[in-house]
Amino acid sequence: MKVIQTLEKSTSKQLKSLLVLAVALPSFGLILPATAATVIYDNGSADGSRGWWSDFDGALQPFQQMADNFVLGVGSNTLSGVSWSGAYYASNNPTAADNFVIRIFSDLGGIPDTNPIYSFNVGNAVNRIDSGIDDATWNIDIYNYSATIPSTTLTAGTTYWLSVVNDTSGHADDWLWENSQTSGSSAFRLGEGSSWNPHGTELAFQISAVPEPETYALLLAGLGLLGFAARRKK
Image (cartoon, rainbow, N blue to C red):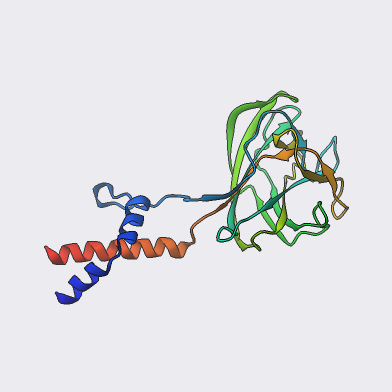
């Protein structure tokens, strides 16, 4: 009994708060959040002005790829999720199965380096929802996407470039990455392995950190400890 009381007293207020926030217990059932992502870099949402070809199989702009720069802060430099906005030109017909590649490039004097330092082929493992707003230039629907990538730690305070490219091979529409602002700094290139060129808009994306499975395991362990202690106390 003394051991149980000691364990119960040692459970921190912080752990109890995390349990309350992250766990729901309807009828003693456990529900964990599907994603509890924290945005660590926000380059803005789609502003509806227009999108730019970022497609390995672009018909009008063959192989054009887009990228935008970002800098992560100290303590927020491990990413595990990316969100972005895009559209399907020109018939406004979303492909049944996207084939996205997310890449991270180092900076080369204000443009991305030629080769990525990280590349994640997430394919169709993305969440895609209609944003409810349209691309004013092309008069097509804008979609919001999100995907989980392997946990990746970058150097805080250093400029990197994020590239999101779809491969709509066999599909009538090309994929466009939407603006978040009509002026700013991004980059494009017209071929795989070619050099990048400056581009004068900002692209819509967010970078997030998703708690590791070990975090959920800690929450579950703490919850089990509280429940066990409560039962023994009764």
